[in-house]
Length: 135
Image (cartoon, rainbow, N blue to C red):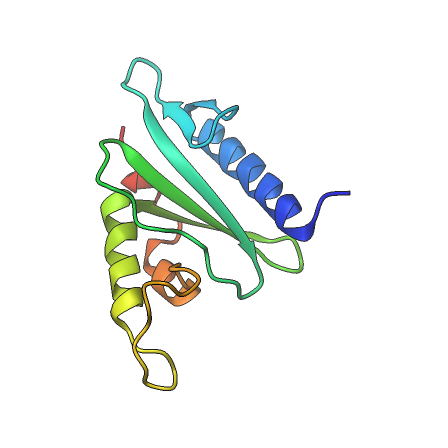
């Protein structure tokens, strides 16, 4: 039986793939990140990360790469889905903000701490920003 985290990742991948197909994209979801393209256009890559409830997305910065986007997925306890669509630059910028924000007790974050990640508060401005994806 899959763990809760495995089930969340599976659901997130299936829902992102379905949404991309509804928007006319061709999707190769056999690999991660997904390889995505509009018919006749150059492919790009989509990293899918899913969480439930109030978890933080465990995402790390990546070196700049052309044509890399992210779709963060939040699946609530009622199985409702929210999508947050970001470019790689946006993800890296939000991770820098997270890492440079002190903890609740005022102490600085260590580079060795678990994470970094993105919080729902950070992701909210990117909700349903599908137009962010390359065309």
